Structure formats: structure tokens, C-alpha cells
Length: 185
Image 1 (cartoon, rainbow, N blue to C red):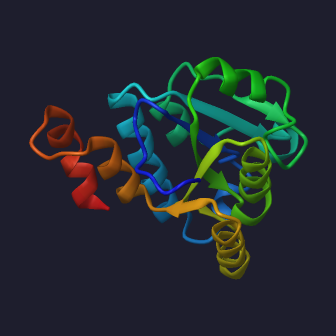
Image 2 (cartoon, rainbow, N blue to C red):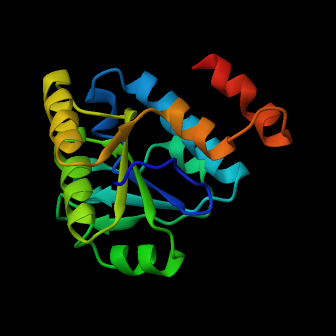
């Protein structure tokens, strides 16, 4: 991603595979969930589109209830590939949104998130990985994956940084609405 601020009018959020049978086993899963929730709250308030995926739901379960409550009405795209890019309907969905900044959240950082990020970058999209809104079972796996993505020229950022870039200024009704969640991070 070229060096530029994230823009709410150009962004789409992808929530990758935060599912019932895997989520409890990832490192600091509650911390990660709080950051994903912050991103989804801001996205909803600012009308930023969200895409949801599930990896082999028969084996890993459905998206966790906390995420489903945050984005009601959004149906997950199911996949077997670790990367979201080959998933039926994924590319079509992104293209239909006409947004060139793709923000990635979810699990696991070193598998589905990293493969999706690298695949999206190879298609010419601007990719930002929200580091604290991703996780893996083992911290070292996540750390190495984030370093690899950073070295590959992708933007690696944090949930709070994303929200402040989308907001651009204090004192707005949106800022006031999000302030309690920002303070709680």
C-alpha cells in the first residue's frame, strides 16, 4: 500500500474466520475481539462496508455471536482455501463495492489473514492489516506473519489508528459516539 491515510470512503473491512471452535484458542482472543468490535462499530457508524468469511464452518463452527451481533444481516462467504481471494463470491463482492483500501481483521494471522493479504496485494489492491484485530494460536506465528506482510509493503496498523484516520478530526458526532469505545481500548 502506498503511504497514505486510510479513507472511510475508500475502505472495506474484511472479517476473516472468527469462528466458534477456533476463536477461544487464539492468543489474547478477548483483546483481539475488542479491537475487531471497535473497527466494526466505526464501520457501521460511518457506513463502511464489511465482508465476513468463514473457513469450513462444518468443522470450525459459525462466526461467534459477538461478531454476528455487531454486523446483523451480513451473510458470511464460506471457503475451504485459506486465502479469501479464491472463495466463491469474494472477488465479486470486493469489486462491486468499488473500494480500493481493504482492511483485514480476523484469525489466524499467519494463515488465512496473511494469505489473503498477500493474494489481495498481488491483484493490485491496497491492503492494511489491523495487527491488534488479528491473532493466532501462537504469538510467534502472528508476529512473524505481521513482519512478513510489513516487509512485503503492506500497511500494518492498529484498530485505534484506523478509527482515527477514518475520523480525521475531533468534535464531530461520530467522534463523540466512538469516544467511549476508544477510551476503553
